[in-house]
Image (cartoon, rainbow, N blue to C red; front, side):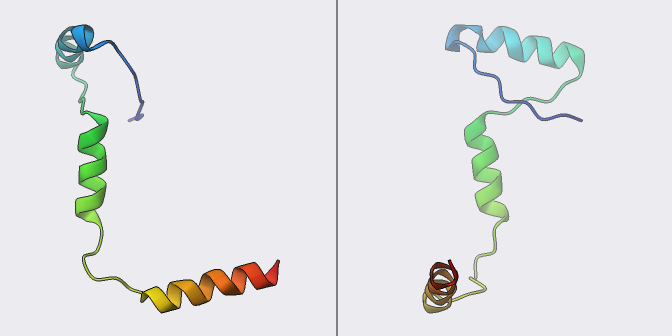
Length: 63
């Protein structure tokens, strides 16, 4: 399965949804994809803000 991003005029969205349905494709809005990603993220951070800043500083100093 290939994921594509396609921008269409709002008035054509219903036509495209009908076409996708008839072809057996699944379709979702970009906003839905972003929400799915955010919801799949861990609710408890694996690193503290201080640890993140220390990593950033280490990379900057290493350049």
